[in-house]
Structures are given as structure tokens and as C-alpha cells.
Amino acid sequence: MFIHTDVKSHKCDICDKSFRQKSHLQQHVLVHTKEKQYECNICNKSFAYKHALKKHMRIHTGEKPYTCETCSKSFTSKSQLNSHVIVHTSEKPYKCDICSKTFKYKISLKNHMLIHTEEKPYRCEICNHSFAQKSYL
Image (tube, rainbow, N blue to C red):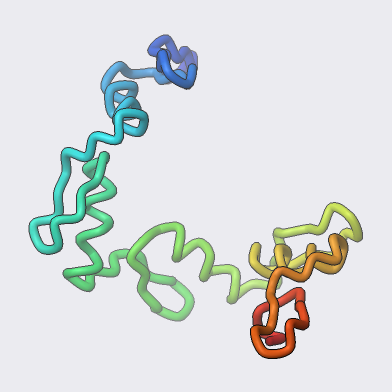
């Protein structure tokens, strides 16, 4: 019933984030306590969440369960697949709020924004000249 009414009655005392289920709140609290109870038995890296350990294990196993239906390329995470799928479309979901130019990738928009801010965060160690993009070095 709570799922349908969207009532989130379990509130975190630390950050006020709310959850539908008490178990989700208990898992969330680990973010604040830095408690990492799930440990990789191969490299000993620890994680607060079981799903994070499961995702990490793919590094060791080489498992890539998410496959692009268009080109059959496989990925370790759903988010990687979602980012990849855009290459097969003409969709440009990232829009500059200043000039309305659109981009296929979030990183392309981020690089574009440097034009408007005139920010040049990349400095050549030899001549001290600054550039908007690392690839210009």
C-alpha cells in the first residue's frame, strides 16, 4: 500500500532523507557511519551496500551482463549501457542553458560550458599557457 501512496515514513535523523521501508533507511544510514560490511574476497575492498560489492565483483570476473541490442557491445553496468545507446541515435539530450546548443554527451556539454565561463583549467607545465580543454595541451 505504501508503494502506491508514496508515503515515506522512515526518516534519516542525520540528513532528513525519507524512505518507504525501514530496511532501506537502515541501509542508507551506513552512508553516514562509513560502515562497510561487504568485503571483496579477492582484493579486500569494502562496500556499504551489497549491490555495490556485486557490481565491483564484475571487475574480477569480467562479467558484462548489459548488452546493447543494436551492436551487441556489453557493459558492466546499466548506466554504462544507457550512456552508450545514445551513439546509435541522433538524440542530443544535453542542452546548454545559455545558448541552447545541444549535445549527445554530458561531457561534451561540460566542455562547451567552458566557452561561456571562459574558464581555462588546464595549464601547460612548459609554457604556462592555459586551455579550456585538456586535449588542447
